[in-house]
Length: 186
Image 1 (tube, one colour):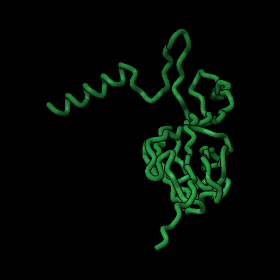
Image 2 (cartoon, helix red, strand yellow):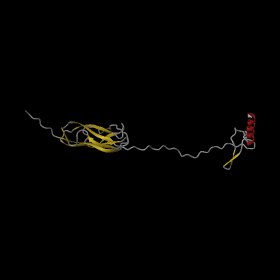
Image 3 (cartoon, one colour):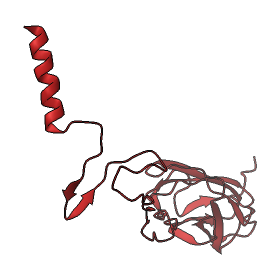
Image 4 (cartoon, rainbow, N blue to C red):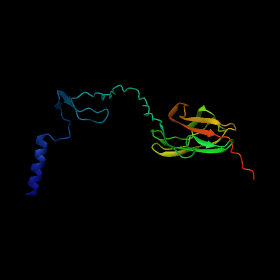
């Protein structure tokens, strides 16, 4: 019985056209010709070159500028030497300010702190701004020397970015140099 089924199956294949000869079929109004090896064409079909794929024109890729970060220095508090502090002539002053990097840029060694007003008071005119990640607080420190003459003195400083553009709150120190107190003689 198995032998009969095999013959029937093989006969059905032959009758339905499942032979190895290529077949034509209509696909969206075009004749479909199955692929064949190069240089061979099925009987009754002209060999035609494979169509060359056409790529659509692609605009030239241009890098997009990364979104620029923003620089913001926000004054938080005087850590030492509050404004109006009385000091002695020639006294060394260790001034510290607590500030916050309230921008989105991280401050690195290219950022500077620059003198912009008042007296330099023995400090350099420009120095490195303490490195700080965005959103963190740091303490900025400048060592000054009080003048010898009594009076009110201030020194104002501004943060600048790597391109030299000022940003954020300026920080300053204001002191009152007073006459030295006479020493008591015995």
